[in-house]
Length: 232
Image (tube, rainbow, N blue to C red; front, side):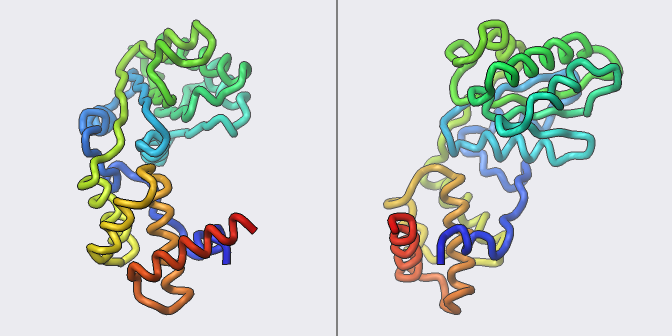
């Protein structure tokens, strides 16, 4: 049984601002809660710090759109140049992964955002990247626009906050993680919250499949089986 099959058994809870454990990122979370049309926010930080979670959470609202580098650039460009009013919120994730056409579309989107900031068709623009605006590996005119409004660096969670996040993820699935399970994960597993969340989901589903309670031996068995599957 592969990890993917385990993860496919039941969906993870959708991203929201309420299930984001902020830790040292409280200022960024508060800014997003208060964000209104006409404002732009650029979030940057290492993978797993929560950029995608926050953008997906914000884009889950009515009249909002989420775009990643896997999205075709044309819808972004159409919104930037269309005479129709844009959605009230647009989220652009992982800008460093956009190709030249995607960067051109986001550049046009920033221009429309600034032009409409004080008009009835104003919208919120959220963009994320893996580094600060000045050091982003994108076209120069787009790089300067990334810093036009609010900029926040997202930090990895402390061990205490990672434990809180994992317990929160487990609670959403009706689970209570034993202290020794949490301690082992914090000591031996990845700091990336995306991978930690996926591990909790996989552990829940694996326990259902095996009809066994979640214990440290079950966790080690899951990881051993996943490693065997991935190397075969």
